[in-house]
Length: 436
Image (tube, rainbow, N blue to C red; front, side):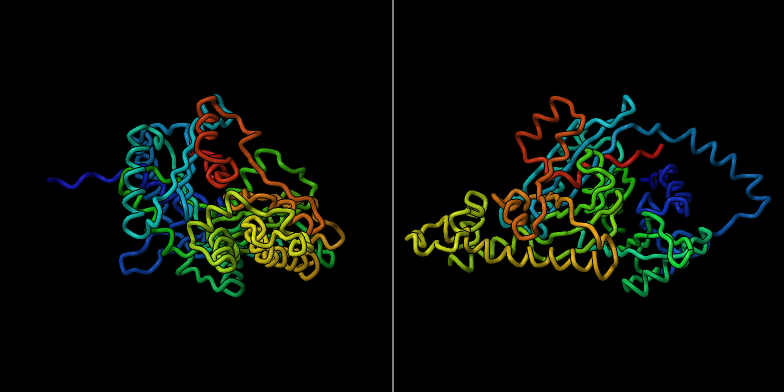
């Protein structure tokens, strides 16, 4: 059987997406194809140099070839599907732009089977994706979420400089600050603002680095099955984008976003509408459940059910709980276990806030306007009130879908399947502008 011809559209995407004017994690430039000897190919966005065709070659064949490819390529649709592979479920959001404005037309949240790990979980995912593809849900451009612990993000301040010099400076900063080498990591940046230091204009830049070993196999696996993968982006940045699109805060506010997943939580601080601090830590859904297992001496499944149904109780957090004679009540024991463990979460948040405001010199004269909670772990009962009391700040659970244009069918799917805060990252991925 003859080998099928390559998809020329994808080939040209890979060749020409490596541009310095696309600094953020975008397009196939993120993956940076490997050369024949196994070394990473040079990329200007990663600080390398691009091979420039000769003047004769450019004049003779390139315009004709580009015209042929454009004629052969199928027209891009207006649908983007955000796909977030969480630790407990696969979450998808489909957004259409037929009328110019983004509208959610479909949502899905498929929980993994209990105890499904490794091959069993992979087979489940493959079956569900095949079904989504058969239904036409995945027709369009796919934007995949990259797990927050896989991504290193750091804010740096650099003098204004030409694009090529900035690219090299960012690669150097990534290696020095994050230990991210351009040969093994995809390195991108986002200019979030400007400041003045000693009379000189400086740029505030968010550097984003992710191991190619985590990205390339994921992209190749989807592309091999015929999916049109447009980009892979960090989950926390997607969640921020979803909340921003929903108009959750005002640009002048100093706010935090805490995304609580199953295995990790990720905190970001935003100032003047831009993320300036991001860090992840392992206080999340699984460890919170384990605190109930250890304190109440029960099994994991029972603890998970109690966490979901009981959550934090005000009665259990009162100092006189033992005097009241209710110390054996499961509500008291579960809430007490959660309260003891979540003090660690509050301490992590307080430490990060102090580091951001004082050591980094950001917003040192301002109070936090609000901490917004997203992710499945944000649904723990009374968590917002607990954190608010510890941080002396407003804390709210965010559902970005409440202010998002949706079809009636999509809204019904969302109500049946899950709470909107769990799909914040998938929504942010789907709201990414399409590539024409």
